[in-house]
Image 1: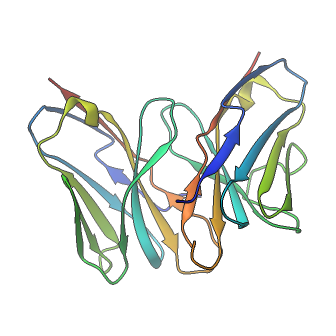
Image 2: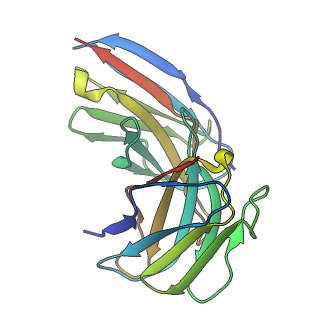
Length: 112
Length: 116
């Protein structure tokens, strides 16, 4: 099962520009996490935001969470070619012992 | 930090054969493990949830007799793809969740299965 949608599905930008990806989900959550995945590789955990938090920063990453709209955004500032990857949001439902549920992902391409 | 080791990282097998994928938590006890499947250019889809010592719970549409999951210990879960077909070719990723100080979800590095 999947929680919801991410948009855009694909995003192409130039190095130095900012990239914004959005994620929507359906159920109540404990937290929301963002992951990166390079082509054919495993997942890299980027950042976690709890349901009682509204914004969080980590380096060039900024995540927002709006639980009333059941949505989150990931902003990557001053993008680099190395940021080229697929980005997924994953929600942890409130129900104990349940799996992370992933969104459909955004494929980001950063050209130099 | 919590580490999950998944093996093999890639495997090629013939149609009709079975393939076993292992997922080990190296430095924590994983009371719950999750198995995901990812087709090319798609997201991760949860296949099943397994708790140590009990039968796995499969998501709708996932054949339990085809994807055998064993979670016999707190550090090891296995996924066996039985009678593999080319349409089973996919990227399989496990995730482990511990208890106590480690409530996080730790992912294995994934297994690329190609059935020929």
